[in-house]
Length: 161
Image 1 (spheres, rainbow, N blue to C red):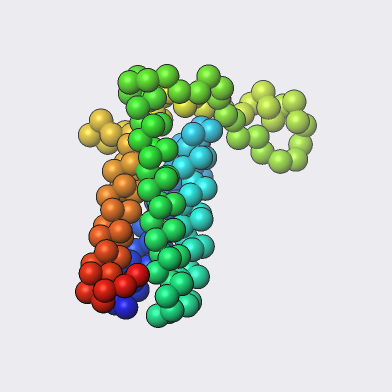
Image 2: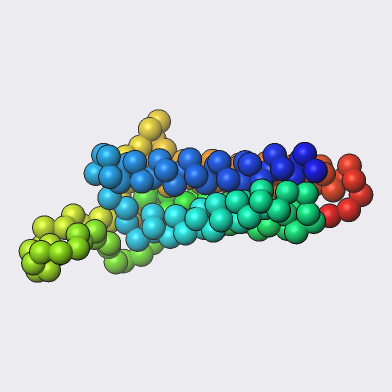
């Protein structure tokens, strides 16, 4: 069961780190998310919840299925990130709409007019030519594959799911 427990910890820590980094970028460095950025966050939240439940169940057979589902959620976020990165790099066309963050309270019209317009086809930040969406793709896809390999190793060693 060590493989499942380690896979569950990875399924918890990876999306937590990626989602935490996105929130730090948003609130600490004014890197406002576009609509496709927000899509990438939801599967990470699902993975975190599933991994926490799997860790609470400990060695029960259901924990393996929860970790598998968490890995698929992480992979989903990564694939959305890969699509988003392709839009940012101009490889294909993405959404035609843009997103804004409108703070609550105050005059709604003033809030809307002063809110930053965030385009999905422009990367607000990159490192070595890789955007945040690109990093999400690379880290999420490789992390999900690693979790799946860990679960497959457990299955091979024990002879069951």
